[in-house]
Amino acid sequence: MREQRPRYHRIADDLRGQIERGELEAGEQLPTEFELVERYDASRNTVRLALRRLTEEGLIIAGQGRGSFVRRSLTPAVWDWSVLESRTRHKSDDNGDQWASIVVEVRIPTILPG
Image 1 (cartoon, helix red, strand yellow):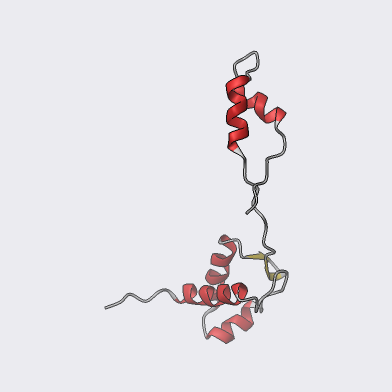
Image 2: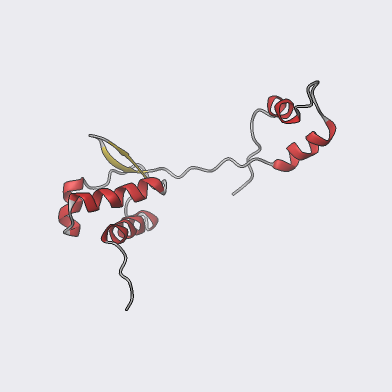
């Protein structure tokens, strides 16, 4: 017998799908908890768990009293570690703390194209 996924997972999956398909756009407010309770015929706690799951995944931002909004996609910053590694071979401060001297010198990480 196949194990069923919890209801809040299915609600989160449905909302995630709407976000991925563009039915809910970046910056758009999600329906209220009450509306989601009615739409999915679920308890308020179940809806809250689904929203928390999407918040933890970084897909939505929720604010008490303000509602939940689809998060704008962010381009992650990625360190180009090869730059740091090459500098650690050639540079060291008086205390031998190579990392501190590199961080001071390289203040902004190199962004790699995604």
